[in-house]
Amino acid sequence: MRFFTSDTHINHIRAVEKFRNSQFKTIDEMNWAIVNNINSVVTEADTLFILGDVFFQPKKKMEENKNILNNILCKNIQVALGNHDTIANLIEVGFKAENIFETKMIKINGVEFVLGHLPYVDYRTERDITDRAWLSFPSIQINPNTGRPFKRLSGHVHETWRLRPHNLNVGVDVNNFMPLSETEIMELFQTTHEFRDMLDK
Image (cartoon, rainbow, N blue to C red):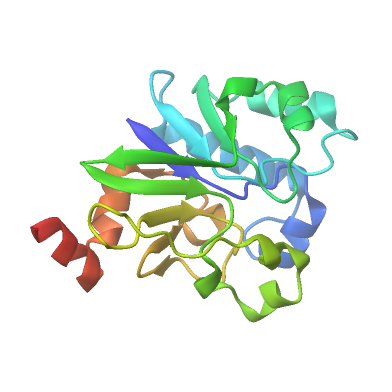
């Protein structure tokens, strides 16, 4: 089974203060809640995709970050580069170079999904417009075989929205700090009329 999450922001004090102060009072509480939640549903044999912004300040807390990563039971972890990530830091903390990507295409039940940290540019928020990162937001990608937009799984927008017609935010802030399974993702997209039409054809 494959699972998906994003924006764990391990060891990021501003994540606690800005996004998560109603859930967690300390960094340690947040860090280990996220790890324990992952371990409660993802087994060692599964694949976990973390779609960016895994850690924060990895150089300052490298050993602590390594320890946190080593406590995740799943060993097949693939990581999309987030705006707070670098390949060098992700490798140093313990991720395999071949498992780090900017975007990746996968299929779930025959439906193609694009994985990446940033959502489609159409769904940026007012906060994103003041952040230079929005300049890198991708345009909606059209599947040449169907003429329909590819579905995108992403993060970055934290608590601002969860589902748009072609884009699901798998970030921890809107998913109860839990990773989403392939089955849950298909169920969520099936709540949109356009996606139901695509599955019917």
